[in-house]
Image: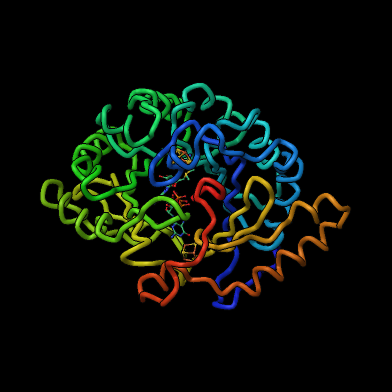
Length: 339
Ligand SMILES: Nc1nc2c(ncn2[C@@H]2O[C@H](COP(=O)(O)OP(=O)(O)OP(=O)(O)O)[C@@H](O)[C@H]2O)c(=O)[nH]1
Ligand SMILES: C[S@@+](CC[C@H](N)C(=O)[O-])C[C@H]1O[C@@H](n2cnc3c(N)ncnc32)[C@H](O)[C@@H]1O
Ligand code: SF4
Ligand code: SF4
């Protein structure tokens, strides 16, 4: 039985989100704006990345503290070589119940089959528009919608369970809400709408660019009636609705208008081995050195336990209550810890 660990707000440690690279082939404005992440930007060298063996060892230590859900992310995780090998290694760790991956989908058609065979359970594909011109602008590199839809198709054929994530920005892609809802309802995949967030330090976030989830629900409900559904599990990020008369669902991730910090069970491990206790943390605790300097599993486990036990963060709730000085704090970049 894993040894349960609680933070200062009584939140258990249940999910580990592992970033395997800080590199990405996209330059989404809200995450890696091209003017900052340009040709001279220095990404992490290979020697600073956790190896697959180190990631697997840490995963095993995390499961002994209660983690059962693993999400592989990035940057773009499919830019890390031999990723199926890592999935295979994590699959063998006792206590791992669910392995998911978040990807921009552009390289998925090439890798989906191998990922499934290695033991990946689910993929979440990010897609913000079905309109080629707008999508090309949003991803900052002119990638076409079809490259992502192909990836989704191949992943579904390979037997992976699929969700789609759409970040909605007012005046940018809010006209895509209904076309996306119609399309993915027809395809039978759960689409989740994410409120645009003030992650990192450079995405130019403004509150008036956030489309509140309740507005999205109202808009879809008018055309395709929705029924609210119970959460699947404690701490689920998305609130869920199903289309009346079917089991087909959508989800709303309301991190700005209805923060969910009070049940946040997520730890985040960056590609260089820093442990972050919040998506909006200023800094992380290094685990790479302890892993490399010969410490035992038990010592590392106690280190992680101590980090979690002093955790008190609740950034999104503080944003909601307009805590003074919050907007001046330096934050980790989303591409560094993976969302
Ligand atoms: N503020 C905040 N946003 C989060 C958090 N976790 C996820 N998000 C946002 O929600 C998006 C979707 O997250 P996912 O990783 O797909 O959600 P998940 O809960 O792991 O998904 P399922 O396991 O499929 O339910 C992320 O890209 C973030 O934008 C969190 O802890 N805090
Ligand atoms: C940082 S990406 C990493 C994985 C992969 N590259 C992808 O895009 O799916 C993870 C998720 O974070 C979301 N994201 C990035 N910046 C965001 C922001 N400012 N607000 C809300 N979600 C954001 C992306 O849309 C994506 O679904
Ligand atoms: S959201 Fe994902 S695809 Fe877009 S720039 Fe960030 S890491 Fe890359
Ligand atoms: S803002 Fe931080 S504490 Fe709140 S839900 Fe997100 S990651 Fe968890």
